[in-house]
Image (cartoon, rainbow, N blue to C red; front, side):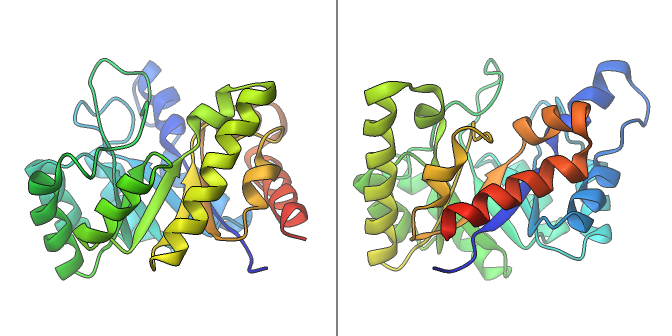
Length: 242
């Protein structure tokens, strides 16, 4: 089984910074520490309301990292222009509502094809690898493929928040979606709500190539440090693959 990559989302380092104002803690410093701790990539979501990551953060991340930067972005003209200027390795298109605390579900790639197509096309033409953040659903996988996105990220929030038999049901949906996505030529990633307690069943899915994890790792870092937080997650993911 291939090694599973770990993308570390550093949004909530910026959340803590913005709660007080000023420059500390610096999400770019956190990204470099994550890089040194074994992260395979860094994810940052530049929201329209700039509630955590800022435009300057994206510019500095693009200049400072030696591992891939994955820019999470809404499907808007403003975010498209920012992505084209920053030239991250990848851009993950996510739904975005101002009233939500965090991204609450996958984007409707099937229902929004006309709006999404030119954005996906322009990002791809600029050499930016496009990912669609979607629910574990065949219709959304087929739509992502039709849009020309080479990558999908399956939303694992329902799995992470479920318990007992309901969690088993959600896990099966992700397993089936990962297998189907890989069968139609998509590279399949996953993320949202993953923790030390629930990551192994997801990490064990053979078709997955990358997990993106942020909030939990930053929270754990308060108690055990960012390096240890990331290295522990990396170990659990590796154990699941073997």
